[in-house]
Length: 212
Image (cartoon, rainbow, N blue to C red):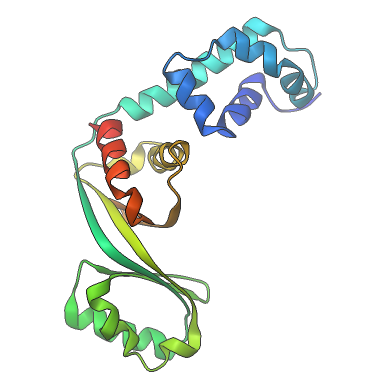
């Protein structure tokens, strides 16, 4: 017998498809119909028989738990910026020293960077492009550069970190509408998503409707 519960198996199936969860939340999919369709998959996952009422109830509980997360109201601001460039660079000491010096001189909210292992990500407004590319070590370490992007910032005024699923649900919301997220940067009070500039208006409307 598997250690996976019926609830775990149901959650896994719903999580695979952002549209399925959204349609269930809006009452467009019958829980019993879901149970009938996925019963064989769930029985295989849990290693035993699972009846339709149990599967239906597990799906109902899961969707309700997601609705409680998404319905929580936060005190926050949405800040957007267009004309964004995304650089991915090999992080050498020379590249980093030049970038830190640039950031220290400007203290610009439209110049952000993060480091993971030996890779450096720079998210900047195009007005900073000349200064960034004046870095003499940048071009030889550049992995890729993307233009025509936008940043959408969620700046929370409360303790959103102790609410599970905030980032997860935002990403699922974007996925359901076909909005690709290129980068995610976060702090204890802010989430920043880098998306295509053409998707900015739709993303802004989605986030307002989701949190407010």
